[in-house]
Amino acid sequence: MSKLKKIANFNQLPIVIYTMGKVGSRSIVKELNQNGIEPLDLHWLNYTYHTKKDLKFLHKKKFKLKAYEVVHNILVKLIFKLQKKQIKVLTIIRDPITVRHSFLFQDLHLFLYDYFEMNKGTARENSDGDFMKKIMDTYIKENYFVEHLQNELFETLEIKEENLNFNKQRGYGFYNNKKFNILMVTLEKLNDNHQLVGDFLGIPFHAEKSNDSMHKWYNPLKSKFSEEISYDEGYLRRFYQENRVDLFYTEEDIETFIAKWKTKETSTIRQKITHQ
Image (cartoon, rainbow, N blue to C red; front, side, top):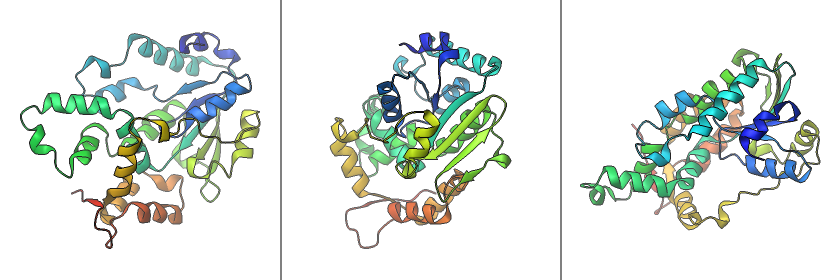
């Protein structure tokens, strides 16, 4: 069923999957489909902020929203506004460093094309050890996580941060208002909460991955990148603080993320990235 047809039948939709992307939403959609349920799978509804701020540097047609996507977003937001029945929404939260890396490789072929088009005279000079970092920083904003959180999830779903009731230890939280019945779950603890998610969705849920990058063309590059990249610890602490991951993760969780990505003194191959 096309997205616009799903919009037309919105009153019959039992669930909306609304995420920031690269959090495994396809696996959830697949399990719902296997149980005869057609969810609405969304990443961006506040398209104006997204195109102006996140994609302002992408001048090729391939990067612009298509007309049906604009219509789709307007219709969904209108239905959210006019809907009288409470809408059930599931959203997934993930380590924002990992999200950035995943976005980098998902659209790497487009980023590379655009980058070399804009840097014809200096592209060769820029192809040094920090090349992938330059691509990532050019096309994927550091504060993407918190901007999506505030401009998409909080604004569209009418979530007030001060009323956010999230169990950081267990990695999930429910939020209810007049329009939405929301379940927020961290991807890192999705397996631990599979029963909770299944009960919310009304299906036997197994949290099986269906969008595994192992089978993607870029997997060798991504694997090497993940093995070699590291970040200055000071940068990581600022990054996680500014992206407000403390709303969903314990201090121990955040320290685990930092330990995973920070520069290892004993490493001779890791590519250290120090942001000013």
